[in-house]
Each structure stands twice: as C-alpha cells, then as structure tokens.
Length: 78
Image (tube, rainbow, N blue to C red; front, side, top):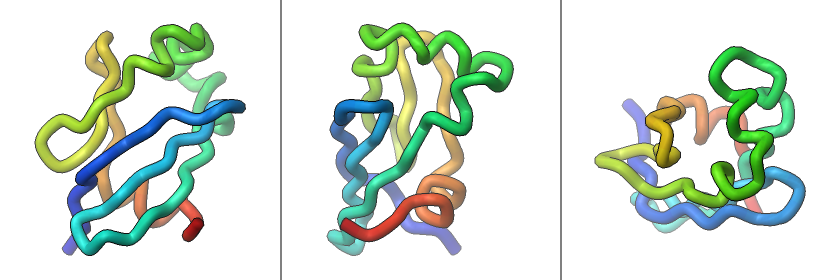
C-alpha cells in the first residue's frame, strides 16, 4: 500500500517538498533523475516548477509523473 501525495511545492536545487495523506512532510531530490530519458526536460527550471498534484501523485505540465511509492520511498523526512 502507498500513501497518496496531498501537496507538492518545488524548492531550490530541484528538491520537492511533499505532503502525504498521513500529513507527513518529506523532501524528494529530483537531481538523480535529471539525466534520465524524459526527466531531462525538467532541467528547465520553469518546467520543473510547473509540478502539481494529480490524483494521488505529482505531474508536470508536460505529462511526466512519478509513482507515489517511489516518491515516499526515496524521500527523506523534513
């Protein structure tokens, strides 16, 4: 079972501040993804900052998304 993302806020240095449905706040570092396939497009800071919650996860304006399980597993509490 996974926790749904309730809020997302883009931060400096390609970090995302995530709030999950259990009210836990965690920080996800997107930098390791920025040289992989479609994620390269997120190097454009304006595209990166277009992130939003979509259903139970996050999505960018160009349709790129990440699984909520990955977001939780690879993020750290803050």
